[in-house]
Image 1 (tube, rainbow, N blue to C red):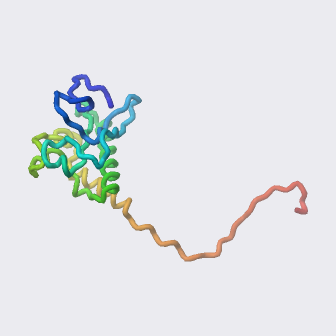
Image 2: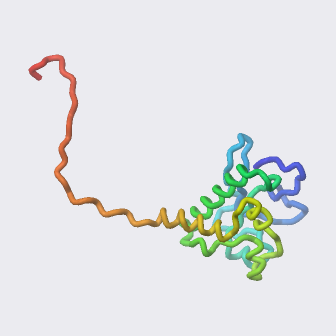
Length: 167
């Protein structure tokens, strides 16, 4: 995903000599489109939190740009919301189960990182707005299907073309 000019990314074997692995990355593909790239099965234990959240949470990284490109942010933010909706549906979770790295640190289950709160506020977002958007999509996905209307007599029209007028 993308090209990191500083080569300080996790999208490589043993970054900085550490044995770490997240479940996926969200970023820009070579063709410029935004996508999720899965690196571990979602139900495998990752090495992403630096704490006990490794045992209980799915971790993914959003590849950053210069932190100021609004269109890039909007695209990866949308992809992250959709990924979380998918994972919530897949594993019976809700938006309340979603945390960022710094929230995990405050809960004592992750190491001290500022992710994603060093970036989201620059674009008017927070983890609360993120969770609200996940909830909104989950509510739409979980809305009950309306009951079918009463059986009604249907009239149909069949159109044909004939070469003999009598037919």
